[in-house]
Amino acid sequence: MALPVNKPKALLADKGYDGDAVREALLLQGILPVIPPKANRKVHIPCDFSRYRDRNRIERMFGYLKHMRRIGTRYEKTALSFASFLNLAAIRRWLKDFVNRT
Image (tube, rainbow, N blue to C red; front, top):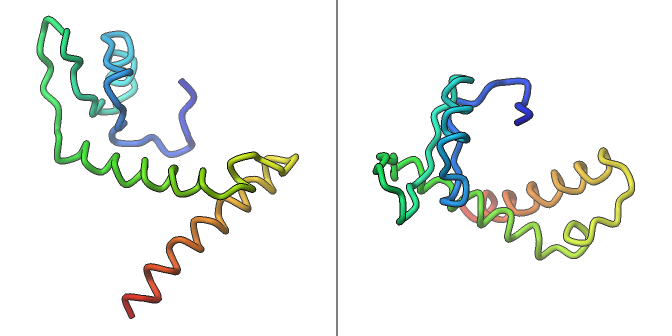
């Protein structure tokens, strides 16, 4: 698993990543796995559901970005221009909420 430059404190993931190998690899790297256990897991592993709720915000942001046609179909040829349009779309989303609050 490739990690970014700064090591995260926790990894929020859905039940599809609930495996002993994934959890062990994260713990060996010093990352707390915040993954709810599958219903068929024999040994129940506790999950911090207060942290897991933050994952919903991330999923909604990805859903918003996928509705933008240019990002969803990835017209850009280089990674830099694609990342730039991702930033612009996120700023557009953030500005709408920010301007309405002030």
